[in-house]
Length: 330
Ligand code: ADP
Ligand code: TRP
Image 1 (cartoon, helix red, strand yellow):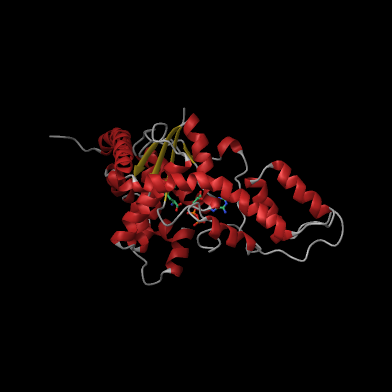
Image 2 (tube, protein in one colour; image 1 turned 135 degrees about the vertical axis):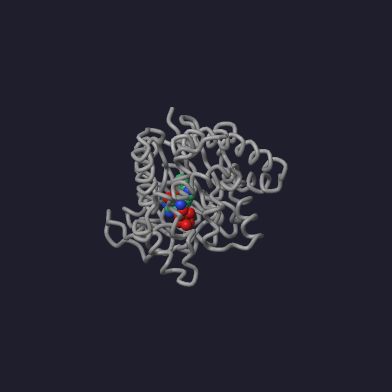
């Protein structure tokens, strides 16, 4: 059974893109692998949240992941800052992480451009902390999106470098992981082009009310309709169909496809159906989120249990690492 580690930055509510693109795979993975899923609250400090924001975001993300079906009995779910062992490894890895390679990282360059008044050292060493998160559990596989590929490549580099330096195989080299080698689902936005995302400002969130969902879907970009049978779909229209293929019954999708191909489609009807199907999908999850968010005792229990298991795994690795480096007890 391979070890899987993945971190989630607590930066906002989950949208359908996060759910179908990432969370659903976590739920499948937890059945087959030894999974460590954590909330990367230290990482989120690079953008200086207020204390209230920090705490609320962690609590919200934890509640949302549990509500979706990530199961604390199957996977180890924890808050990064509860596992101080990660910091020791972070310090040790920093000794072999070079300024030049850190400065060349695309995500660092992007952030430095986005927040020129806050180019802090945490931002620079973000990939080192991420590498610690991963290799502290001797992870074999890391499910991450495209934007994290370079950070994962750095983690592989730091693991290899440490192994070589101390002539050991203490760290497996972590591989990127796609569930069953499947193409990752990309959930489109409904604003004409591109993906659904927080920064794109086009998210349909799991906690949105029925009314908000309906409003967002009814506002989706469409056009005046096809003029010839079996016409190719422009991007905005394809996006409506793609979202429908994700949330609706196949027969519903076929129905609207046939209408489109016969030039009889009414986008108003299609959007109403799509909104209804999204609502049906998210209603039970939304209810769960509310219940779990308000159940402080349950959240505390999950976090405590997760931290204990994660610390045990982390401490075992650190013990080997300290010995390799030459730390000895008197
Ligand atoms: P956002 O794009 O909202 O900022 P993140 O970058 O925090 O979301 O992504 C968290 C996870 O959700 C990643 O694994 C990412 O690949 C996945 N994800 C985000 N948006 C989508 C989308 N539209 N389609 C598929 N997966 C997505
Ligand atoms: N950097 C990741 C992101 O922004 C979050 C993250 C932190 C992570 N540590 C990790 C992901 C370890 C995978 C493994 O999405």
